[in-house]
Amino acid sequence: MKSDFYAAITQIASERGIPKEAIIDVMERALVSAYKRLLGPNPPTVEVTVKLDPVSGVARVYAEKQVVDEVYDERFEIDLAAARRIKPDAQIGETVLVESTPRDFGRIAAQTAKQVVLQGIKEIERNYVYSEFENREGELLTATVQRNNGPRGNVILELGKAEAVIPPKEQVANDRYYHGQRLKVLLMEVKKDDRGPRLIASRAHKNLINRLFEMEVPEIYNGAVEIKSVAREPGLRTKVAVAARQEGIDPVGSCVGMRGIRIQNIVNELNGEKIDVVQWSSDPREYIANALSPAQVVEVHLNDHDHTALVIVPDKQLSLAIGKEGQNVRLAAKLTGWRIDIKSASALLEEERAAAEARAEAEAEQMAIEAELASAPVEQRVVQADGTIRYRGHRYGPLGNDLVGQTVQVRATSQKIFIYYNNRLFASYILLEGGQASPDEE
Image 1 (tube, rainbow, N blue to C red):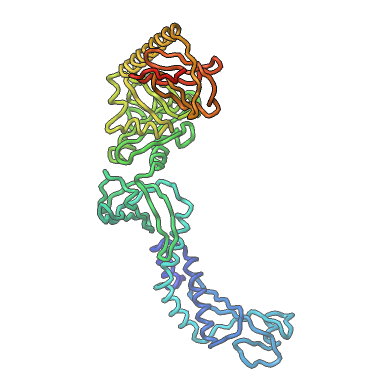
Image 2: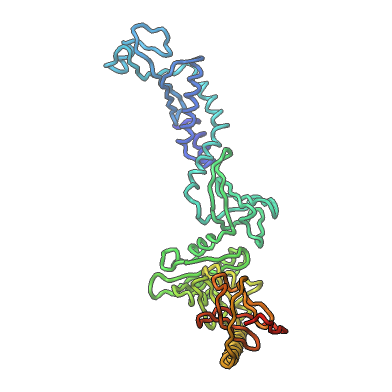
């Protein structure tokens, strides 16, 4: 028949959710310390073990004793005859493990067990909780809100026998946390400190989206569909890029589900946060166009050097492509990793027309200059000591110290002066007005 001691140990283990063996192990270690205190001050170093019968609760002490001819202290010594009843080949000077349970040790064991139950069970429970969660970082857990410390405080969650905390930066502004509420959280970090394990949970991390899709979409859980990228503004909107890893599977359709039931379940869990599921593509142009969904895209121009993309959309789609306060294009940029600039088709045409007109004006101006130069006379000038030349009462330069004293050729139009050296254009300047030729000009 099982004793009251066994029943008490079983009840404690059941209530605390920890193994009976862990409780007994702590009690045995506490009883070893209690026995050593009985040996008095400065006892010799001896090996002591205590075995606690889990059924009866009886504690037996086994201590290491030295084999001697004559016993002076029974606590540490044993005579040869008694030693050989335990170990037949025992010799003088050896040590043997002998049951050394003191006469009143049952009372001491009961007091120690009480102290362990009152003081040590919490430590066992903390270690057990830590070992349960230490390898579960990144998992999706279902928790119950225990306490909300206000908009700038922590939200305390109950996870079975453990407590978790959602710090303010991991909370979502649109969420409303109330006592008894059940919600799904991402376990971000498991810390161990003096007060026990500290579990940090999140509702704002983008990996929460991955875990929710794995839970709701079997194709993602079994690997037939892969989440390539996630961009999230918690509580407002999320974009998810998915790709099929098996032929014949529609990755977007798999995530949305029949009549949108799968994606709706995730939206409901996130309290109405909008979610766009888009097709991933290895072609950056196609990927960027998909990422701007629900807007339609006319074409995408890439600049690989700056890692930027110019996206052309129909005029009526411009506001949709940009989104409220730029949210749609901002999330698309995060999702794809490209810096995206959006323009309407009419704006692009206007820019191209303006650029064409500017090019035409520049070409016409160049032709006019060339026509004037063709009829302009060639004049000689000597480069002065300061590196300049004089022309019609004005100085132009400097042309450089290496040309000082050299003769250069000058041709002028109505707007500019062109300086040549060795029949090659060396410099040009805007022609200054109002000058008169001075007598020293050559």
